[in-house]
Length: 202
Image (cartoon, rainbow, N blue to C red; front, side):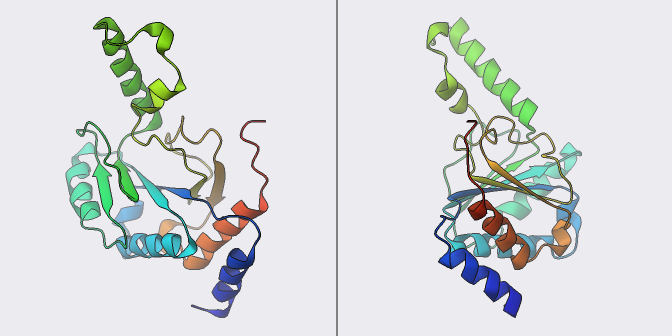
């Protein structure tokens, strides 16, 4: 680790502010085609857990659904310091694990699926429409726990992910592409998170 990285790590460690408990990373299928992309992803997980993050959520945006099985296999074999659960569109629910990966499920598709499940439950008489609240929806989302910090590389947009979950999250966009993402870029994101005052919609 270089001098500047050690400086950033020290600032994060010595800050009075907490590090985010839950960090979401939004990357694309194209990002994972770059040489060394999975090594960077493994390193990202090391950086996160070494910093004190408790859970990492990874959203992989996919344009070609034919690529999903290959991505699923590669991500299931990801070298990670904590257990990994991978969910692709054919799965019913995400397993509870410190590292959770969702492939190809955009936010609108995810939300529509949750609404369909609620409508079916109501039609079958298993759910009273008067009892439907935020928790009812969240129970049917891919990731029920909202991230504290969302990191998006390469562009200032969420690419149709985390529509519900990120409403009160702190968003961090960097023009650094995934293939060039380094520990210092992660530490900058965490440090900026520490310097913000979270308002939770207030």
